[in-house]
Image: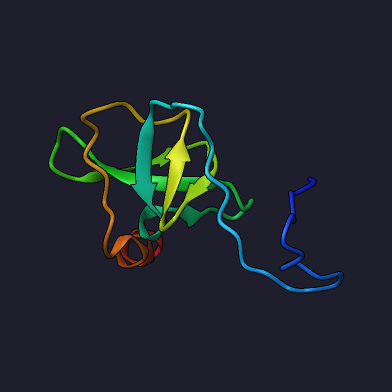
Length: 96
């Protein structure tokens, strides 16, 4: 990527911190990073509240990361109740 440098402020081999913002409007679900776990095959999943009062493991597809959240293009629907804090403890309890 080329960047205009009319005042010569940027120098060769200079380190800079940049934030790139996209103008693309997106719709979808964002999920906190803390909610995402990995299975034995390193595939991402989350726990969602089940109708029987328990929790079910659901495989998801991760999109891009936005701060402390992931875009979830597939695997969840609006209204799904996802465990976002303590999911690792729930996983431990279900694997014992």
